[in-house]
Length: 220
Image (cartoon, rainbow, N blue to C red):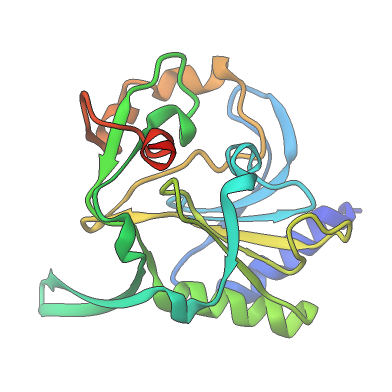
């Protein structure tokens, strides 16, 4: 018999797979066998689904998240070339974060981080709206949380942050310049496992040598 967490995540994913352009895999252990709280990730790791336990990187910076409404973000239309010509997609952007600077280890598990930056911080609009609508229809609430300091995933929950109630939460990764700028969205991820990706992490963000980090910018 599946656990309550496995059943809740599985049911939610089966519903949204017909509504968003992604497939989801249930995960309760990493490739090296490390057991982690159950989660579901899309095939490209751009969306994560959780029950009770959220990604550790989001938990570490939970104090930076504030509740928002979608209208507080700016809709941006992006045109992309295709074989047939071009197509457009709408994104939500938080304009004040253009050129945001931060430490790479805030988003990734790294033994040695560095100053990084992103040109823009956007999220696929229809995906975010669809996920919020499904949460609201299934659980009676959809609370959207956004990090105005660090370019982290949009956090959409069936319960409020700090609530003692258990529920589904979904995270949607940042996109910048037409590609994903990932946060590690595993519920847990030992450094021994993450070390294999540390070299690739250099390509996730733009370097910002000698510049102020986001936290130091706010303090100043």
